[in-house]
Length: 326
Image 1 (cartoon, rainbow, N blue to C red):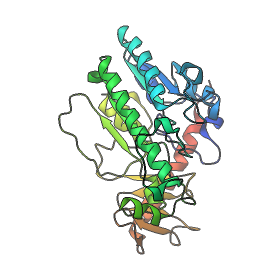
Image 2: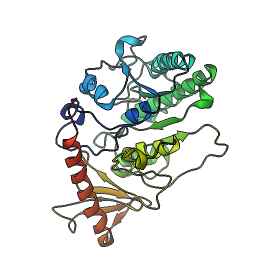
Image 3: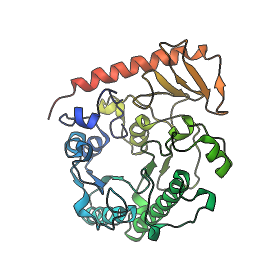
Image 4: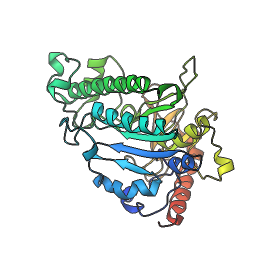
């Protein structure tokens, strides 16, 4: 989704069902501008059919398990630190050749079940959180943050930082609702927590060279919106390129509606106000406020959002089925 701005079809994994296609993508858009595009993942490339998906997305190449020093961080393989060491090394080689690059680094150190070796831990959680999923999650996320710091330092040391747009985002939810009750999170962290909304509230952080002042954008968005937003920041006009994106540039819209599929029934959506989940239709669905995490009883004014999302997903499905095979 982040590389294409296309909705998943919801009936099978896109990597399996469309790994033989030629997918319009951010790598292809940037390759047309003289960039080379590479993707890095510490697992074997056959996992989730990525050996088919990467060429479908237009990457020049990939680096998988055998390219990393395996410090046996978890079941996937090497730690995020090793992922970044190899990544920066390969990108520095491109810099020396004067080749601009697009790189995707898929981290795995904070993946479920959040078990990390003692030698990598940077914090000690309180006794009441030890041997709990929440405690393990906080420890893994803390390590992930630390590793991002090593990436930034390496980019600076190798002269890449001043010319790099750095984008960080969450792949999918972390905490499993069946294993971590909301009350435990609220008690441990002192924050309100909803097992659906909060676990879908993933980070999206963009650092652009030359920006002297950061800002928080409150607009609701999702992985579907990453390509339009980044393309804009990179000076690539989707309109001029004739690119069909089903998401939006988050920096240039006044309101957003984002459909959710796979983890919730089709027709579910987020807008700037609520999460809505349908029943058999719209009227018997349910809505929750993103601000208060409380149920919204009268959501009738959002029916047009429901109809919009269903129509958009249907258009996306028809679009992706028409894409040519490689």
